[in-house]
Image (cartoon, rainbow, N blue to C red; front, side, top):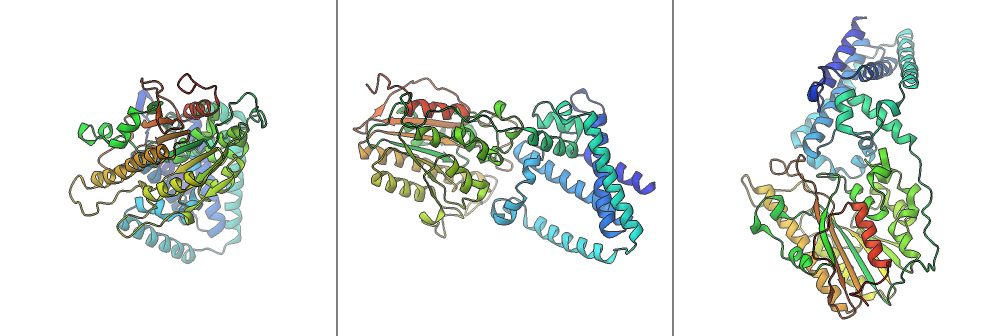
Amino acid sequence: MLTVAVLLAGSILLDAAVRPRPGKSGRGPLRSFAGLALQSLMALAIFGLFLALCGNAAVSVAMALAIMALLAVASNAKNAMLGEPLLFSDLALIGAIFRHPQFYLSAVSLWQRVLASIGGAVLLAVLALLFVPDLPVHLAGLGIMMGSLAALFLFLRVRPPRALAPHPDAHEDVQRHGLLPVLLLYWLRWRESRDPQPHPYAQPPSPALRAPQEAELAVIIQCESFADPAELFGDPGLTLPGLDAARAHAWQSGCLHVSGFGAYTMRTEYGVLFGRDEEALGFRRYDPFLTALGEHSYALPNRLKAAGWQSLFLHPHDMRFYGRDRIMPAGGFAELVGQDRFAPPQANEGRYVTDAAIADEIARLARDLVAPTMLYAVTIENHGPWAPEQVTGPGALTESYLRLVRNSDAMLQRLMDELAALQRPATLVFFGDHRPSIPGVTAPGGARHTPYVIVRLDSTGQPLRGTAKPIDLTPAQLHHAVLETLTGPPSAAEA
């Protein structure tokens, strides 16, 4: 009994340290009754698993509490950096951590990585040394695990996930129920979701959609961590000339209200490509790529295909990341242009393929393509964390970010010039996927929007003017704006 008491008390204390903590917004010092019940049953199930494996009660308690402590630390770190607690969808990325460690481990300091490695080795050694070959104890652990899971199942039958988490609100639900319960509840709610009915777009040829002009081009750039530094840092002297020029000639521009901060490229990418907003996604919103294959009929390339367009997807990284190698072809992209098609970065250019290299490939494709084509490119050069490089002092990370965002701006300017020089009907869409999370400089609690611009060029390379007033959009609304621009009835400016 003492072992169980220590386990339950430790699990509740660890969960109380998870942000947002209980006691905020007028709540009491503890999580909800349902949250405490789920927390206790999940802790017992984890304890039972380790007891079944090692046969040592003290080690099993320590291991169960260590796992809960690890989740609590990870959740608080994520909340501080990205403004969100740990979610079930983050656990789906564990495999990606091993395939692409540079995206994740670079955000963890060297001493933390060394400490974690030593701790892992010590942990395995301790488990081996303290293993107790006592079959009844192992069977008791198995019984505790199975009994806890059965009680968990019965509890969720009485208090179903739909009642405990009716709407996706991670901050509110973690504050109310706790971290482990929300990981479980949100996963169950996600599993309950169903694919929408196939989109009723007409098969080609479609009289409802305007056919593209001969050799018409559309270039969509999803730019990594791109934000207006003049607004981001509150300094008018940091304006970007390419962004200013694009806004001055834009068919439409404004703020793109993305949901993520500092990460979650796939949320913005999904919104622009599939056009389904977060209200429609429900609990799928946290990583919509996990279920995107079941929604492929909504993808922009599939809808453009009905009007006579072909589409290519460009990304200078492993296409297996986020499952793009399967999602993009299902969504209607005729070709995936991967990392082997781009010049690798030079020694002084950072770790990722540069925006200039992406502009080179887009320009080459644009010159060679003769059929109406949409090119959708995802950049990567400005992916954090940002290195201080030659600059030292408090503003080192900011200077590194500014250097890279200016490279992105130069890409925007170059693409406008390249498309204009082709003297063929073209549309350029450019937007940032999320704001950067720069430690000590930017924080997730404020504004999250990024800029977007839609520039349209006629057959002589001259910009077509649309509305001068900024129009703010969500990524899903940008999808529909692009679709209307490319397939809707011609405007007065085009007639």
